[in-house]
Amino acid sequence: MKFIFHNKRSVFVLLLAAASLLIVLLWRERFVMEKVSPTAVFIEEHMTNPNGTLATYLQDAASERAEIAAGREALSESLGLWMQYALASDNEPLFEQAFKQLQAYYVIRPDLYIAWKLDPQGDAHVTTNALGDDLRIVGALLQAADKWEQGRADRLAAASALSRTLTKRTEQQGYMVDFYDFKIGHAADTLSLVYVDIAALQAMRDHQMLEPDAYMRYESVLHKMPDDGLFYPKSINVSTLSYAYDDKVNLIDQLIVANHVMETGNKPDKLIAFLKKEYDTRGRLPGQYDRKARTPAVNYESASVYGLAILLAVRTDDPAWAKQLYKHMLTFRGQDARYPGGYVFDGNTHLFDNLFPLLGETKLYNFLKK
Image (cartoon, one colour):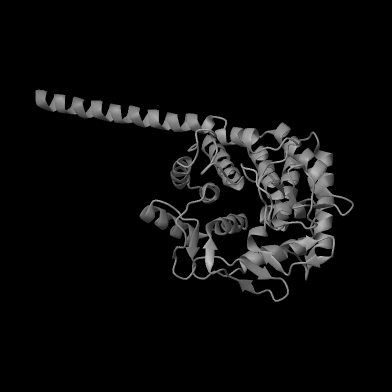
């Protein structure tokens, strides 16, 4: 009887120790998630130009091709993601700063469109927009107008003006297309599926800035979108309504589309199952895949892939997968001691490889807090 008593007591002590360790680990994770992200601090300290615009790269470099951003040039993509971060972190002053940046530098008058790229001084040398960035910004403006009363009228007015330009000037065959050149009046004939930001389009419809029938066309693009058994197409031709695939699949694109699909009420089960299996097998998610072979096409990993995968895990109510992705993502952060909080490699980084992880991290924090 004495042996049995001591044995039971030992088991109890072991269980108590295990429970205590679990509590400590959970508290440690919760404490880390509750901190202000060092990535946001890195962006504000190292990726911000003197005029307040967000630089595309950490290191300065001359632009060699007008259609590709270089060095400290600023992108409307970055502005939209920064607005989304301000919303997710409930930071109205930060959002207001971004809104002022939009009005001061990005909105080109009198046409009232958003230039997709600026030089480091804030001047636009391009005459085209980028639809996905536009919709992200318009969606953020409408979300902010619904979230915060102060400044509501100005944000609604800006969203309305930008929406009107998109629907009146850039539509082709009933669809807004990837880009429109406001100088020569030339429009693309494709709509990239990463640009079908259904949440922003819903907000435009709800605020009477997009006709219900027009919204249904975009929703139909996602509903009718085929796949090759796993991966999504790259784009749709708005004249023929035919979908096109890339031979090499970029996981960033796939994950953005998957997040859009979730907004329609569908779940990208095949892609999620594939990504989980790949991670379990390889311990990583390479940035690109050969579409037909279903094998990695590159060796590198992208912090953006993990940030977007976290967003997808949160949307699918999968905290275990989200935490797993988050922990792996953090192994890429702060590797350069000069730039704590940044996803910096070889002394340089692209801003979206910090913004998507920051957004995923913030959404995960909000999700776990609930």
